[in-house]
Length: 382
Image (cartoon, rainbow, N blue to C red):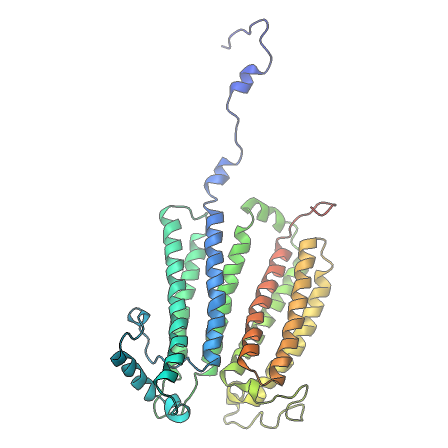
C-alpha cells in the first residue's frame, strides 16, 4: 500500500529517486571487447601487409632458397658463430640454385640473402605469436563477442596453413641434381593467394567490428544487392589476376617481353606454346603467362569501370566514395603494370606493383562491404 503524499510534496520526487532503467543491458553483455579486438586485428593486418611486401622483396632478391630446412622453433635463432654460418652455407651450396647460377657467391653474399629469408620467416613467427597472445588473452577473459570465437580461431588456422604452404613452396626449389633453380610458380601463387585471403578476412572482421551489431543488422535491411553481387564478382576476378601475377613473378615472365602493347612485335608471342605437354605452358611459359596476365588486366579494368558505374548510383555517399576509390586505385595499378613491363620489372617498381595490389584488394573489399551494409546518412549527409 502506497504512503500518503505530503501536502506540499513536489510531483515526481519519488519517481526521480528510483534508479533509471538502462536499455540494452542484455545485448551489452554479449558485445565483448569489440574495440580492443579491433585494435588487435589492426595490428595483425599491418603485420600481414608488411609480410606480403617482405615476401615480395625476398623473391625479387632471389633469397627464398637460402635456408634449406624448415625448423619452425629452432629456426628462430640465426647462425651465431662462424661454424654455424659455414654449415648453413654448405647446405645452400649443395642445392641446384647455387650449383647452376650462384657459384660466384662468397660468404658475405650468402649472408645477404640468408637475412632476407630469415627475416621473412621470423616475421611469420611474430604474426603467429601476436595472434596466439591476442586470442588467448580475450578468450581467457571471456571478452570475445558472441559468434566470434570461430572467426578468430579461423584466422589462426589459416596462419598455420600458410606456414606449411610456405615450406611446401620452398621445398620445390631445394633440389639436388634436378636442374631446378626456383620454386614452383603454382606453389608461389598458392602461397601469395592465401596471404591475400588472410588479409581479406582480417580486413572484413575489422570492418564488422567497427560498427555495432544492431547497426549492422539495421544496415543489412537496405543492402544494395546488385552492387553487392557485382563487387563480389570484381573481388573474385581481381583475385584471379593476383594469382596470375604470382605466376608471372615465379618465372620472371615480366622480364621476358618489355614492349607494350605488343609482345616481341607480335600481339600473341611466338614462344607462348613451346613446352610439352601443353598444360605446362599455362604455368611455365613466360610468353603465355605474361600474355594471360596482360589480357586479364585489360578485361579487369573494363569490368571495374562497369562496377563503378553501378556503384556511383548508390544512394549512400560513403558507398559511392568507396567505388570511386576502387576505380582510381585499379586504374593506377594497370598503369603501373605497364610501367613495370616497360622497365623490365626492376625490384623497386615490381614491389610497388605488388603492394598496390594489396591496396586495390582491400578497397574492393570495403566497397563490397558498404554495398551490403550501407552507412545511413541524413539529407544533410551527416
